[in-house]
Length: 287
Image (cartoon, rainbow, N blue to C red; front, side):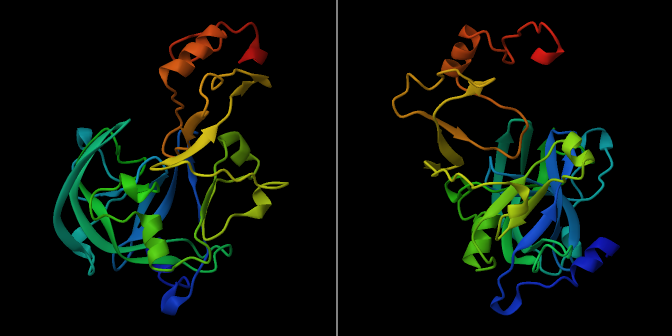
């Protein structure tokens, strides 16, 4: 067991019905993705994970799965080293915007949270069901991350699979059934504002004023109503022709923004830049 994994076993855990709030620092990968440490199995193995509100299933890279070019894995899950690893016969193949992966589903213990003073304890999920990645294409590089933690609603999950956050709620592990992201840019991080993820609470020091809560209109991903998009404070009217407004989702698993054709046409008509409609900048201030 490495030093990080050994230290995490000494964190306070939610044993005997003790509910916790947990804090995790996230690593900013060039403003493209945000990853954080989790621990899987017994004894716990450290895995770097991307927490993805745009998907539901959890997938963890198996140590025996080859990567393109035989790339070296910084970390991976050694199933034979866990005393609580249990395989199942269920299999699946999943497609993401950046590639695909496949494997069989297994169950094991999963730990989230740190002993950094901001957590009241560590979230320890027993018998979490997740995908054991046996084949993959362009998802894992060996140095970016080794797991995708799906945070969306159960309606998007494979049959019989309960997502990680829903498993936390079902096992009554959290002080409050919520999670919160704080994602900062590399420029912000240079000023000491680090990205993080909290379970069981949200960090009130991260903002001023009041939170504006939005109802979830589509419990598949986190679909909320969009009234309009403003550019430099000017309304685009992108949803004006849609009586019910637009529906958008917040996807923590990607840095890309995508929109349907009707919105692209509206942006193009207004002379606004998109991936398919380049606009010449007149000065650096336009960029």
